[in-house]
Image (cartoon, rainbow, N blue to C red):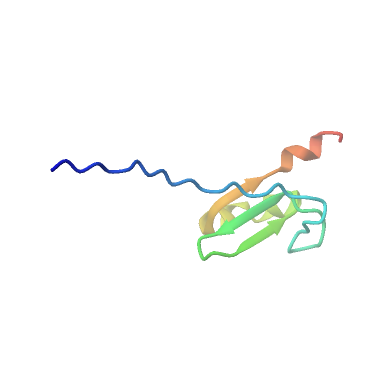
Length: 75
């Protein structure tokens, strides 16, 4: 008997882009960095606080979505 196994691909859904409604958890400014935590939660940071807490965030992050490149562009 020949067993055929299906090819299974696991994909991670991309995070939705951040909008002007996303606010920094530290100061309330517009967030440009989303940190998805290993524990399952998420934190949002403005560019300033992302830089300030960057080293610690890398230790606890499962995934980081960095949209700080939007700061240098004009809509």
